[in-house]
Length: 84
Image (cartoon, one colour):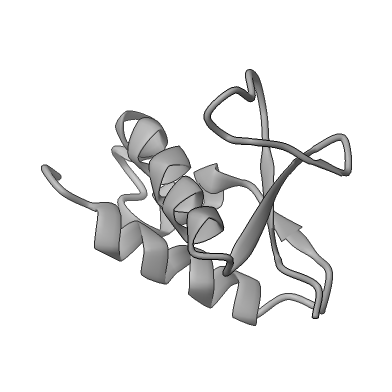
């Protein structure tokens, strides 16, 4: 899947909409929703999609519960809606 970015953004939104307020998802869940067989190859794009949503103020990216900058975060991250 060459540019799965928009599909991944929609998947992140849909997964978060289905969760309780404050709940998080892993970017891999969005990748699996878009391509169940090839999700591993989508992981860089899934992280990038989460980063774009974070830049727009729609979500926060966290590690161990703390909000992080995805551009500098290394390792597993989680995504949640911005608290309002």
